[in-house]
Length: 151
Image (cartoon, rainbow, N blue to C red):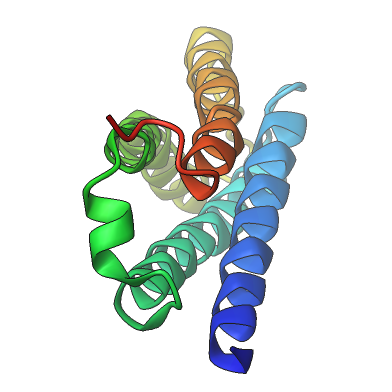
């Protein structure tokens, strides 16, 4: 019982941290990005990736070692929807990450670098879409936990 509670705690904590870093990215992207801001958002994105990895790892740990067992989750369509949403969010995060890496290279070569406005706006739009899509994760988690979705 304590194992299940700790696994849930680690999973929820990882999710909250993931949302915190994704929100931080959205906030930094609100304004023009000079070289200092580019370095900041690149660091935030690394921590966001780490939080996503911890979220996935703790979720797999719950699946394998949790009290409900893998059968409870894998038989429920809400679990599959939750996994699909997680994959969608991960896919949406690739273009901004690639953009941050390009900006970081440019900022390293030019201390006066400022990210082009259309690129900044596109990255922010994708991060905002990520946030909105990710906000569906708790809904499917609650439905799944209550056994909704079973036939």
